[in-house]
Amino acid sequence: MILTDEQKAILNGEKGETLSKVLQTVIRYGELFGAEKLVPITSEYNHLVTSFGLKALGPVYDLMNQLIEAGAVSGQKFSVDPRPLDPNVPKNFLQNFIFNHFMYSKQDFYEDQLNKLGLMDKDAFSCTCYMDEVGNKPKKGDVLSWAESSAVVYANSVLGARCNRKSGIIDIMGSVVGYVPYFGLLTDEGRKATWVVEIKTTKKPEAQLLGSAIGMKVMEAVPYVKGLDKWLGNELDDAACTYLKDFGAATASNGAVGLYHIDGLTPEAKESGEALIAENAKVYVIDDAELQRVYDNYPIIWKNPDAKPKLCFMGCPHMSLEQLKTWTDKVEAGLKKAGNAKVVIPTVFTAAPAVIKEFEKTPYAARLKATGVIVSYICPLMYMNNPLCGKMPVITSSNKLRTYTTARYYTDDEILVQITGGKK
Image 1 (tube, helix red, strand yellow):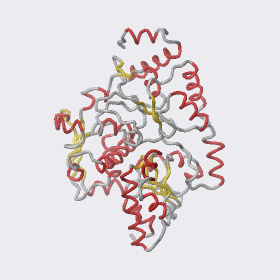
Image 2 (cartoon, rainbow, N blue to C red):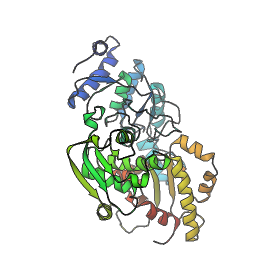
Image 3 (tube, helix red, strand yellow):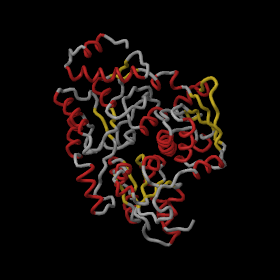
Image 4 (cartoon, one colour):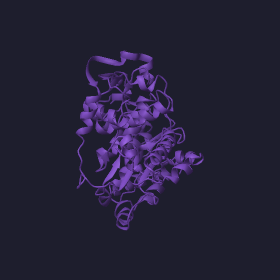
């Protein structure tokens, strides 16, 4: 790998043995992907994926201590993925015991390490760090060192930043040393689309379902999506960004997409149009029948497929302020139609702590609370990792949560009917 004089000096230990090891790690990671050089990180903030104090992560805590003791802390402040625990989320005595004594017993210890390393603030825990309320929103062209897949695909696609999908801990390594390897989605060539996706549905596709279909088809490739602007328009307003947040998370978790282009909408597609499409790109046509085929083929892994749901999670990735408001209206209307005062299934809406604070300033917060819905900053995936929680019949409209846990996927409309006790 070609290194600058400054990078050579770090590698040779002129800024300490620990920083030299960090750079060695970043270089080896880059060499695996054929990177010939390193480029500076240019974003104001970083984002870490590892937010949970799992007892089993001893090597991570040792590594963090080495960085802290050597003064090799991040040159950037950073946000981090959601916390795994919230006392307000339903759990029984045994589930709570496992959470606190066998799973996340190191949470307070780890959060102290994160603070010493450069956490933005005590509430900077969210997978949607790019929300205006959270404050970690990269600019177009910024080079990042992020690992959270749903945040990476959003930053690349909706914001026009540049970041490769990384594994946890590599994200903090890049942030500490200030460089990332130059390959893949950091390059112009790597951002070209090798798939063209033509949307030919008769109605606006469910974001999570459409993203799932595309992710499973193109895997890690870059898709150029045509026809979606018909429903989303040509401006990245709150509604469009919220849709693309959930769409992108599904492409990244059901496949491995790190970047997509939406014709006439996302920044690079508006600038360059079909010039972003690589030669000999493959074509994938999505109509109503294709979406139904994808939906019908999701596995149901509950022990009893006919079990009555015991919990509903909405918000993986975290919900936006707009979603909290629109879902308040939806739940109220659904309950009124069903003749019920409160949700009939314990329901948790998750959002970033900063988003929740803004939501609580609005009249919507009291209205939603009156329906029985719980608003939490938790990571639903971390909750479901508890083996006793994983055995529960949990429903969700998140394709990410469906993919990584035993939760069962339903569309937004189907979820609304179930939690309000309405009729199908």
